[in-house]
Length: 158
Image (cartoon, rainbow, N blue to C red; front, top):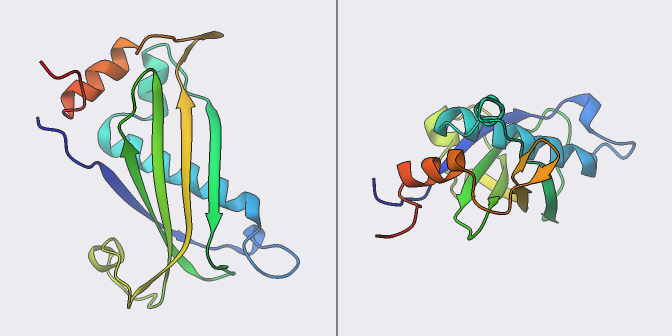
């Protein structure tokens, strides 16, 4: 399979417990939204946490970068786009775009196709994870991840 852009979308309704005293989404809630995006991506593309565990691996977060563009508040409907970023070495990188839906009644097809008139970009982000086997950092790309990259066309070019 030739390399292509791999991405997934998840719809996130903002709950009361995720806002702070000034009634906007608390900054730490966004990190949880990114986790929701990685979990959905993993389920769709065979890179879920249970897949990793079965291979004897974990992939802890070592870097998170968030750029806030606009606030969200309770009852907003957000759409998170999670994109795999090919990277050299033994790391897993994702970019994210978080949108607030201007029309909460959009179908999933419409909601998962961001457009300027229906989606307001409120956050961009990137996470980096490193592979570990037990308590040991994997310096080389683990076979599980190399096989996954090969499956989607991100492996070493022959």
